[in-house]
Amino acid sequence: MRMKQENSSVQAVDRALQLLQLVGESKDPISIVDLAEKSGMNRTTVWRLIGTLENHGFIERDPLTKGYLLGYAANRLAAQAPQYGSLIRRARKSMEQLREETQETVLLSVPKHLGTLTIDQIDPANSVRVAHYVNAFLPLHCTSNGKVLLSTFSEDELNFFLEQPLESMTPDTITDPKLLREEIERVKKLGYATVIGELDVNENGISAPIYDKRHVLVAFISVCGPNFRFTEEKVLACTKYLFAAARDIAEHLQ
Image (cartoon, rainbow, N blue to C red):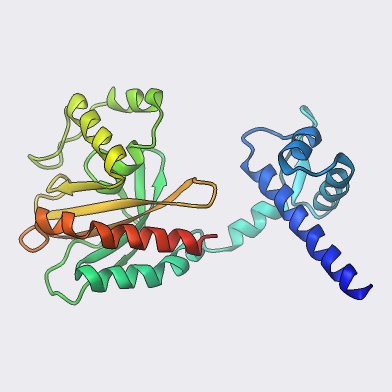
C-alpha cells in the first residue's frame, strides 16, 4: 500500500508538470478541454491538477477567454534563476571537448529577435584568437549562427527580413537578398552554416543548431578562428565534431 501511494504521488507530479508545460507552450490561453486532449488525461484529472497549480500561483485563469496562462509564481522562479545558467552548465563539457578537437574558439549562442546573443565562449591556448563575443548581439546575415536561424524562418518571415537593408560589415558580407536566400537554402540542406570573413575580415566560423526534445531551436554551437589558421578547408573539416557536440548538448537538455 505504501509503495502504491508513492507511485501515485510521482504520477500526480508528472501529470501536473506535463500540464504546466502545455500551458507554458501555448501561445494563447488554453482551455481545460484542450489540455485534456493534448495530455491524454480525462477532464476530471485535469481539473484537479489545474486547480492545485492555480492555488499555488503557477497558472492563472484568463478572465476573458477562461483559458489558462502561466502565473506569477512560474515567472518569479524563472526571474530568480540566471537566464542562461542551466544551458551553459549543460553545454560546457561538450564545448570543452569541441575546443580540444578543433583547437579554436567555441561559442554558445541563443536566438533573439532578428539577431543572436552569445552567452558563453571558450578560447584555445593559442595567443592569436577571435574577439570576445560573450553578451554580444550579432546580426543574422553575416554570422554562421545567424544564417542557421534564418534557415528556420517561414517564407513570410524570410521575405520580411530580406526586404530590410543589409549592412555590409566587410567586402565579403552577403547583402544581395537573392544571394543570401540561396545561401540559406544551402544551410537548410547541409544542416550547418559558415562565414568566411563576412562579419570580420580576419575571422572564419561555422555553426550548427541545437534543438530540444520538442524540436524547438534553443541554441547554436559555433567554432571560430583567425582566417590565417582556421582556413575554409579547416572550417569544413570540423563539421563532424560540431555535429557531435550539438547532439551531445541536445541530449543533456532532455
